[in-house]
Figure: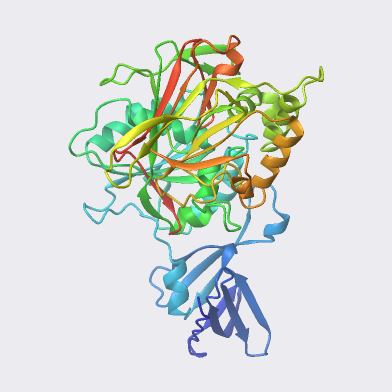
Length: 477
């Protein structure tokens, strides 16, 4: 996009930083991916605020043309939370206001009376490296203070167990959604908390008045695949810009159906639970928004899902990969065995049909709706934010060094999909059938958005896109 410079009259334009008020001339440059707000003082000194640092712009009550510009400072030095600063500005450029003014629904629903909205803030104390509570106090609470929003207009929920998000959604959020009430959920979590909300929203029938809740993600997990894939982490604000300025769009989902003996592994795989049963098919079912995988990826997620591994953040996956690809006894990495089939749609007839992948030994089988599993790990470069196309990445048995080489290409903007050894294709569905080929249950683990499901010896999993509107996700469009 070409630069678009807008200047406000010098007599109207001022900056107040603390107690110091200075007349300035503003210029706002929309220059591709590097927008900046610049202001020049009468003494000739010029300052700038990088667009990637701006959380939002908030009107000042009863003060015409006056706004608070809230932004992060020293983003390159930040660790677990951003340092936040604000300045008061008079006479900001109109283009700048259009780009950065808050869209947060401050207790007002355009389709109903004032305050006809419920705002839930879910603080997942177990996600990632356990920084969610501190992030709320140091970052979110100060940012919300710039809104005309009282603390009694939102509800804080601290998770107490792995069941907390599921129970809150089933007992509180779902009934209100079925009543047609507008709800905004702000979740400080990784992908696991999101999949808990999705499955709980689908745990009971939707009524005719059902209104999908709006989900704002503050990525406090280890992988944060969904947040990375829809651009929430593209700036320096830790997701706070999306919180304040985002718009809600439907979140594409998939449905994974399992054979009757499948079990969800919990408590670091020391316990197992039954999956919810689909009322129409009677099959154990789990819904997701990110990934269904079997093989190496599912193994890495399952092996690294421990308290000790989680201390290392996203590095946990690379640590587990080295152990799996280079076993201590010097043997080759495991060759995964199953029949894998894909569902394709004929472009001419629009009819769907299943076709097996022409091999029964595999290393990596992963179906996804998103582009990135980590910020720099682009598993599906053709995937667009909320595009809704299910894509499959797969390859057969390889030596550990070769697997590392191929996966290393994913960190180079998804170049692995151009490797001759890698299959990459649009699909309508995926089916993995074990047919007794894997004796050890360790090799029959399926990953759904970070959840690990163990399938029985003769079991299977089938994945299809879910077409029902369930939840919207808030992001910077």
